[in-house]
Amino acid sequence: MEYIGTVYLGGPIAGLKFGDCNNWREYAKRELIKSNIRGVSPTRFKEIGLEEIASDKGTGMLTSPKALTTRDRYDVQTSDISLFYLIGAPKVSIGTMIEYGWADSKRKPIITIIEKEGNVHEHSFVREISGFIVEDLDSGLTVARAILTG
Picture 1 (cartoon, rainbow, N blue to C red):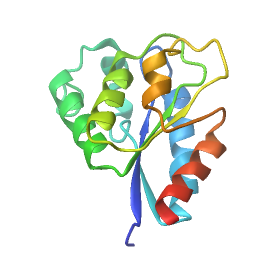
Picture 2: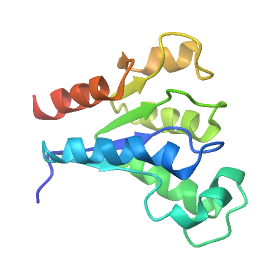
Picture 3: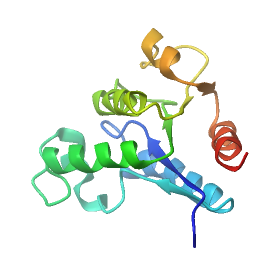
């Protein structure tokens, strides 16, 4: 299949169980593929090492801090769009905030999915560099499809 574009699916991992940080990504990938858009998840191939990843003590080929940083930076910089799902985050995700910087430095469109108020990631920088701010995943996916298929 030839994809018309890619969407990096960023968001917190630390402090979450694998399903909590991955279920929305799997849903997003299933929805995007219907429009020939590839969703790129930073949790791929990491099921076994998620606790290591969240604790920054990874030692595996794909879970060491250097491996995570290298692959996630590559994914953000080579995707067409970054979509960040921040709903219900238990604490600020430093990694996700760095991914925002990588996306912005490459002038990639940023879609932020965040509660109207009260999210731990609430910050003027997040709001300023986000081209689109919505309150639910389906709205974020609609924006991504509109950008890539328009």
